[in-house]
Length: 224
Image (cartoon, rainbow, N blue to C red; front, top):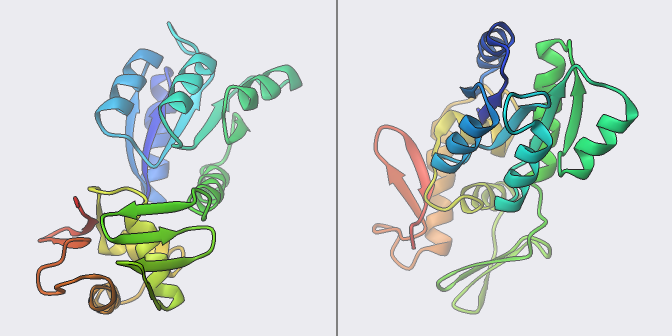
């Protein structure tokens, strides 16, 4: 499940798209103006923003530029304007994809998942968290300078959690992101993998610093 922020001024489109994307398993917050969208974004950054281009007040181009200036959260522009000038303008403003309305929810869901796959890939070099270093390019992990051998699944789990320190990931969300999309497996797979990961990267697995349990919800990375 991805946390989405949908910025759309048309109330019927906004409500319809929110319901449809929720049926595809996403957690969807909405905003009806660019200003409201930026406030929502600043309060709790989502995994991805679906952004209408024609908004009252600040338009979608400017909203996209400000989101891009604030970080790497991917943006999909969703608009009725599909001429080449607007497509180029949207991509130049920092959008990761551009979808022309009307669009079927299944198509938009597929585009969202494709953008998230690209954005979640290894691209940001070394993540350093105290004694733990995660090289997302070389795909290596070291603890206190010593290499740590992880299985591919353990490494994907660590990459997923560490890309957003402090954020809580539910077990089902981890199943979908780490194992495969729409994976309908036993959530104990997550718990078992977390235990193995802790045994390799935590100084004291019984009192983990890096992969922490949030009782009743799931897991988070840190704070460390």
